[in-house]
Length: 419
Image 1: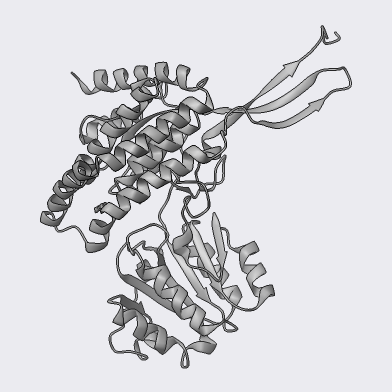
Image 2: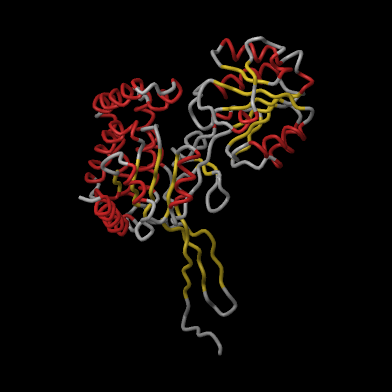
């Protein structure tokens, strides 16, 4: 089959499946989700076996440790994946909600009601759990989905996909409600981006180059999930032990995720007293620290920082450090160099915290907590399909509610509009 034929078949199947999904009952959708979660648990060994193939290939290609961590599955991560699907099943159905309702003077009754988006295309890299998260979220919101995972996670995603297909069948839902591209051929992605007759929204989860390609090649609307150039700013009146704990977690818990802090900003007032402790903590945690000359003078293991570093998502154990003269400089730096993903302030000054929360132009702004909480599961959404850094329709974690749109239902009793 040609690339065009493969993609048209996937698109046509998705459109047909969506017609059934859009009107499926909450109980039916939940049955499918619960079946998928159960099958993932029951097939843990098969999924781990497939994942070992992906990890072995990644190690052979000398992928970074942090990226291999994103790719690697464990029994605990598979259990968390299944638990996330169960959590999505437990959420209220986002479809059919009356969002607003009013009556006009002429007697017309108008309701704004939530409905599914349609067919969603999800293009993602590395993390195989996105296969389950995206499928479950789209299914709960009544959308069909076409998945294209990264070539590095193809075996893992395929094993998870088998569980999804079986779970759909168990609930008597069309198996084409969730489909995955049959190979990692990049030509399939190119064809997918031109399927505006079939796909209503594209959700990309990957680096800047992926977003640029989609923007250039596709006419399909997309939820932008740009880089996670996240900042933690330590303001002088902060609980220093709290700041120390938060920073290490924000950078080193999982350096390869999009919510990991990539730049530390710290008030110059703390440069000689507290910053040396932070730098030492980071280096002892096997994190490479980059800074300007004043930072290098604090510890001879600090490497020089370049202008490009402020605009870099490392996705590994590297952090750039900068001292700032004031909260104004910190906010300006973040708004200039950040990716509008997630940024945090550590301070005991409530007024300063509110300024930061109001003035930093990011999808997620935080006070006194780790940027690694930038996650739909941690927000109580069960899971997320991505963090949208755009401003239209959805922003921040994209969960089931963000995967719906709305229509107006107008009821009358014979009214006609005057000439």
